Length: 60
Image (cartoon, rainbow, N blue to C red):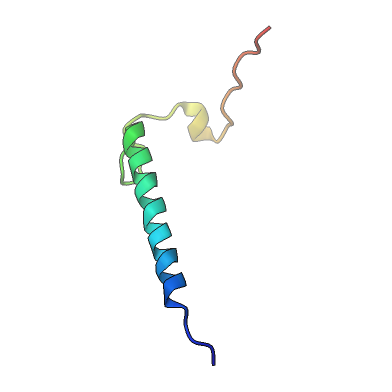
């Protein structure tokens, strides 16, 4: 039977923690709430209806 590679498992846990921390800092920098809800800004009716966002006007 193979022995478990504890150093690999530890490294994976450390990388997961680092990713989670970076995501949290990114969300905080954007000003979004950490609880995952986007209730801070009301959504337009198009988004509630499931329509895709409007394309930006073409330049030229």
